[in-house]
Structure formats: structure tokens, C-alpha cells
Length: 196
Image 1 (tube, rainbow, N blue to C red):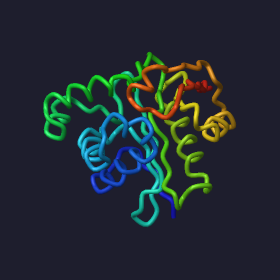
Image 2: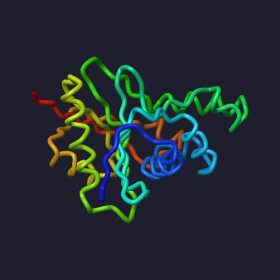
Image 3: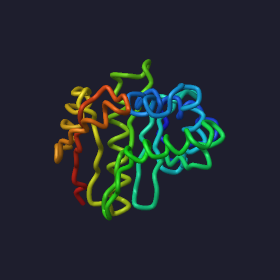
Image 4: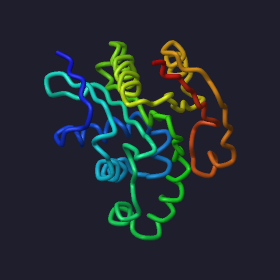
């Protein structure tokens, strides 16, 4: 039986970090380097309250990480970066990570990531997570949801359109993408109003 929960329990922290990194590897691996170090950083900087997750029989199937004006799901600090990368590399990585930051506005709930495990894909897990965040946002008085999609993921863009999101901005990121090593040229900001 599928269980949908808000707030990550301790035993799901490690699989959630792995799933988050897998879903956003095109963004994070060029900045953070080795997957083991990147996973360690992500696991240590998770804010467990800023997510919904779906599990079945103790296995993590999907995760939706979100950000509000009060905080985000993932917020690695220099203090967490230094033990993993050393001071000089940590400073450089912190600067590059700041390029991924989204400035959330009043009334906005920003979806940082939606990730579904390989074996649970095409089973409506992502849709269930979106449906839950819509209910949560409405109950908490948020006016709209936003998310970003990289331009190399048209499938995700189409799914979000079906769920009521529309494109509000296309941003080209050249030459930063070439300097960092990102395999995409732009990001698409999408928005969905929350109706009362």
C-alpha cells in the first residue's frame, strides 16, 4: 500500500539524498564532482520538513522537495562543504551552488525537485506528489506553485503542462553552462495558480 508523508523520517534520509541526486545529477554532479561526496553533502544538508515522499513496504518510491520564503529542502552551508571538499574547493563549490538558488517570493511555493525511483516510473507517483503539494499549498494559503525544467527534459515539461503549469520564462544560461559543465543550455520556469 502506498503511503504519502510530509516530512522525511530519519531512515529515509539516505535513500532520499540518493534519489534527489539521481534526479538532479545534470545540475549537481558538474558542481560537486564525485557522486559519493555529493551524496554525503546532500544528506547532511537536507531540511526534512520541506518535502513529501511516497513509500511502499519501507521502500522510497518518490520525493517532492519544496522551498518557501521560510526555507528550502536543500541548503548546503560552507560549514558542511569544508569537511568534504577542503576550504578552497568548498568556497568555489558554494559559489557555483548559489547559481542554482531560487529566490522565493511571498505567496509562492517553489518545487525544488520531483524524483521517482526507476522501478516506480509510469505509475503516477509524480502526479500523486503534485496533487499533494497542491492541497498543501492551498491549505497553507500559497497563491501559486513554481518549478524549473531544464531544456533537455521535454517529457517533464509536457507532464507539468498536463498538471496545470504554464511556461512563464525561458532563460538561456550560456556561457555559464559551458564553464560549469552543465549539459543543458537553458531552464524553463513554469507556474501554476492555486485556486481556492
